[in-house]
Length: 188
Image (cartoon, rainbow, N blue to C red; front, side):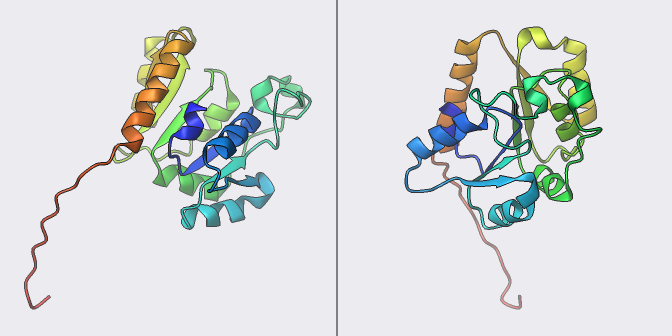
């Protein structure tokens, strides 16, 4: 619910995406969330360029009610998974151009490995990983920052995670006043 309330440009999901869709529809009745899959990624990229909100389901529809859907996030044996996760250039462009929040990944998650390899590693954009405290050692968090420019944010329990997301929602919806001074010469 909190993730759906924050004004994200796009949702890229690898699991439990149905929860996001239901909550988004409940909160934003007037602005639908377009749904795309890996085979319709060109249309998703067009929605991104038009600044329309959308969800891109990288592993198809995945919900608690359909655990047989093949996805990395519901922990199928590696023998049943594709050889490699190849993220198309459109996803690379999305993750090169946007601030990114990674939620729900674990240290051994191949989806995280694939996605973090395509993020823009410059300091102009911010990337955060929200993860339970017990999942990472400080050295791993330091490596994520050094190698991928991803800031690791630990939370002890769901209450802390909820408080963080509420604060993020508050900040993202607050009006921000900008003072702009324009200077020019008539010849221009």
